[in-house]
Amino acid sequence: MTRKVLSASFLTRLGRDIAGNTIALAAAAMIPLAGLIGGGVDMSRLYLTKTRLQQACDAGALAGRKAMGSGSWTTSGTGNTASRASELFSANFKTNAYGTGTLTKSYTESNGTVSGSATVSVPMTIMRVFGMTQRNLSVNCTAKMEIPNTDVMFVLDVTGSMNCAPGTTCSSSSPVSGAKITGLKSAVKCFYEALVKVNTAEVCGNDPTATTYSGTAQIRLGFMPYSVNVNVGKLLPTTYLADNWAYQTRQGVFYKLGTAADAGSYEQTSNQSRTRDCNSWAIGSDATGFPSTSTTPATFTVTTSTYTFVSYNSNTDVCTRRVNQSSTVYTRDDADGTYFHTWIYKQRTLNVSDLKAGATAWNDSSRQRIGEDGDYIDASWAGCIEERQTVKNSDGTPAGEWEPIPTAAYDMNIDMIPSSTTAGSQWGPILADTVWGRYTNGNNTTADVITANDLTDARLYCTTQARKLQSWNTSPSFVTYVNSFTPSGNTYHDIGMLWGARFLSPTGIFASENAATSNGGAIQRHLIFMTDGDTQTATENYSAYGASWWDRRQTTYAPNDTNLDDIVNARLTALCTAIKNKNITLWVVSYGGNVNATTEARLTACATPGKFFSASSTATLISNFKQIASEIAELRLTS
Image 1: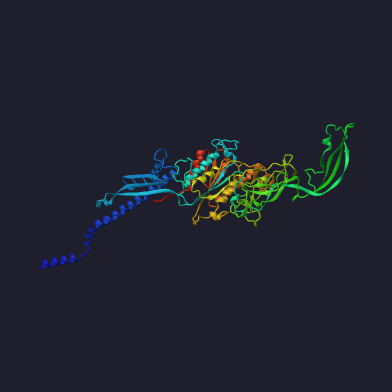
Image 2: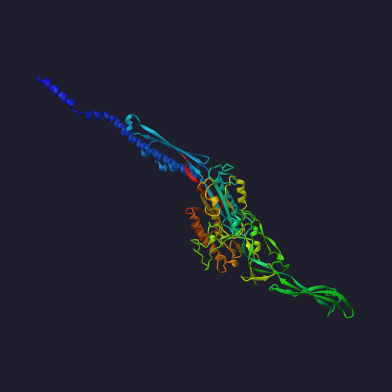
């Protein structure tokens, strides 16, 4: 009996004791716990591997598309685009990274879009216990150029040196073989093909097949050809130009008949032999008393003598004639006189309001009384303009004088709207037919010059008319315009840069057109400035500041060519800063290889950092323009 009691008591105690259950529970939970931990470890490896694999795929696609630029996709040759994509992939995902196994990758291109794919095997660790030895991971990526709403203003040097071939100088008035102007036209067309993706007849390499722009973004291109001047006037509202403008011109001196009286008659005999020319002496008339061309009296009297043959005495060889005299008083009348006497060359303010034909319409000439013998002429106007009020240089050393741009320098103000109520804020028309230089004995003078002669007129260079920003969705009109560029004249960089900025600015004279797209979209803005040489001015040029030696609108002294060069360079530097401060990307291209080191440094500093190019040949210029087009287009991942 005692043994049974002890056995029952032990089993009861054992049944009630739960401490031993932990071992059993732990053993039972080991298998699912191993799966949970192993799955977490291996899933973390899979997530990390796929993330890095996707990043590598994206990097390769972007690199391949960027290397492709506006050109074609290549799979062979040094530096081909396919190998560039593969290199960037490998730089971001090494073979056997994170313990991975077999790796495959590939990149292809279609219609400018680079697509890539990659697959890698990932061996499992703890999950092998459950029979899962590896997983294969795959990713895809796509990169393409997507152009944002973009405005591009070309400011292009079309000076006379553009008729020469790169690396040479010449004096030709028309393009020589291989002229820089020909290369520039090709480069602009290739830029158009690369950015707008519309084909032209130009051979640019990998030409687009489209003949019409089919993108969704707004792309507008504008042009500002420049040399001594820019041709912008007829693109402006008529209120932007003044009705009256001061010119270095001339004014006729006229007289009209005041009073006339008969002074009587008498007979006169010859005092020498007249056998052979009696008639020529005895018949006719003459007049005396006209003032010299160097004087302009209020009145003068002219005595006219009329001769009539009376007789000839053969014995004495003497002629007799009757003289009839009359006296005429002429009174000066510059407004209505019919007798032209002389010119007074001086500065005058002319009424040029007849150029205005409406709010935005212009006439091509202004009626002025400055023609031969004081007649009226139609002074032609091509559209070039004179600048508005500026701040004058007084010491011949203008470096830094316009930076920052002075408030009173209206001419340097990119955004100021002209108004007839703000003195000095309007522009004036360049009328070459009305302007002469003044000189006496071959020397320039600011004094009035009175003469009946025609002095030398000012030397005018008026470029091809500019073009406002516009969409060129098909190429024919674009090509026709670019082909119209005609080189001539000297190099005034500042006037081209200034008006390029005015035509591009979203807050200036064309704010209503430039601030945003028609549906309110934001716009990226780029100004491409190209020149083939150093600043070159001349005091005899009729520039945007008139005839510089006589007008002196930029100086308080009589300038020479060096003074004017320095002024242009200082103003260009100030304008470059002002443009970049307007969030405009400023690209600068030096073309032809004839630019000196000082100018090259100035142009480099002018450009937005990293946006300066130097092209010594046409092929390089075309490549530069295509590269700029590629960089303007945004490189994006699309999947």
